[in-house]
Length: 472
Image 1 (cartoon, rainbow, N blue to C red):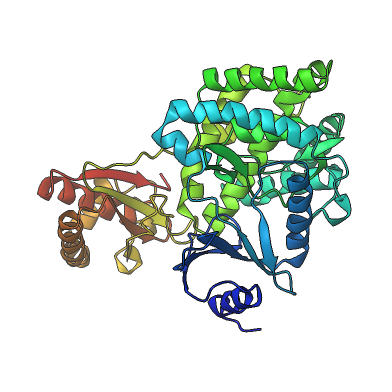
Image 2 (tube, rainbow, N blue to C red; image 1 turned 120 degrees about the vertical axis):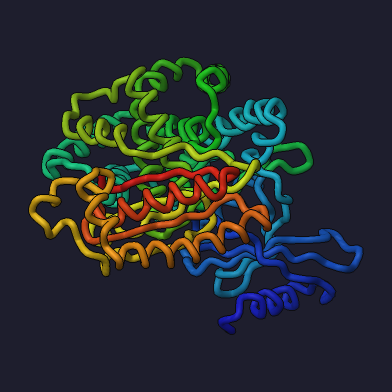
């Protein structure tokens, strides 16, 4: 087998006896490592297009294949699998277009909410009917929602969100709280299909009906998790009123199918909200802070906002003091909710420490910008009487303004930055990031970032400047 995915897809299309007149277009990547391509046929054949997928993880693909055939057999709207190769790594799938429920939410809110109601009705069917005769022996990575899988998610939250944000906690006490919390969640009825990632980006709107993708991580589990995943999706940002409306619709639908089940569902529902928020914070931390995928970073302030609202309305269901301590520190993190700015160029000017948090991540999706290293400049931090001041205070400012090296450094930086700004404005770009780093992030970088921000505001009054000093 070739290492060229396009070549392997061509071989698979030939083996499946499809027309040879087509083009293969790569599709944008998502949060997973799976690769997707759209195959568009030039001949007037049906289907006129299909999706080719590649995933190295055969066990996950086997689960997807098995679950798809099962859900199709009971009439659920899932994309048909036309063909797959002998390795079970390449698949040819039904093309459901490009419109997700999440897309629709941005363009036609009222229509999207109507679809949400249908989606919730379908969710109850997936959970209650979908589990019947489902082959859980192929479920991946686990067949049921158990203590081990809960602790995986809680530790995902700890290692990829809590620790990278330098939150102070007692690890032993936090693990004790995780054990208690897992025990609480496991008191839920676990005899249903847990879709696992039931959210608006995994729901396609095709022929005016919702269709469902990315269920291959499904397992036997609790009802509450999937409804929380849908209603508390950070970027969807559903209002409390809409969440309540959809929650009521779910409770009504569930009680019609399983009379008397709503009381047990309601009792543990808030606990599952906390659990899902922790799980997605771990995912956003990994995808955003480790893999530097901007749209996951953009979701972090939204999930923090959800956590804040939840803490005001509902307790977690147990006394978990160390976890509460962690939550309180998360609420104090300095994240801004970013909005799309189509009115002009916004420049983010930052000072940072190379030794502490490192170069700031660009959450706009622009991929970053200029990074200037101030460590070659005279260091006020080495002068006893200046050490306790910052680059925003007079003693340090007066010292650095007298240094020839600093003036030359800023002149060179301004020359480079002005060139970028003028080019970005002409090309109608929306975002540019400019970073100044030094050893501690408190003196030289702060002074330089402040001077550059002042320069930009003076020379380019039509540009929006956001300044952040990460260490002060």
